[in-house]
Length: 82
Image (tube, rainbow, N blue to C red; front, side, top):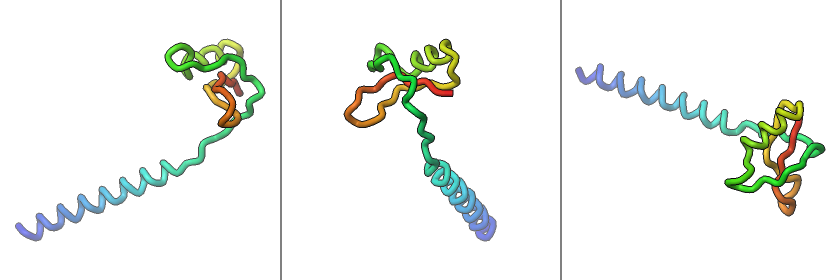
């Protein structure tokens, strides 16, 4: 019974180790940047956010849209991209 218990514990440790390594690899994925050529509406939290921005960009014929700012000093605007 002791050997079976040790094997089960070892098996669980191996599974957890593999899962945590997978999470770490996925979290290191680089964020894709997009150009700020089509930015128009200011994003204001609680008023005009990422979901509304995406919908407006989609209505304008773009594939993507999100609130972004080119530099830390600039305000966040709705920027569209294909």
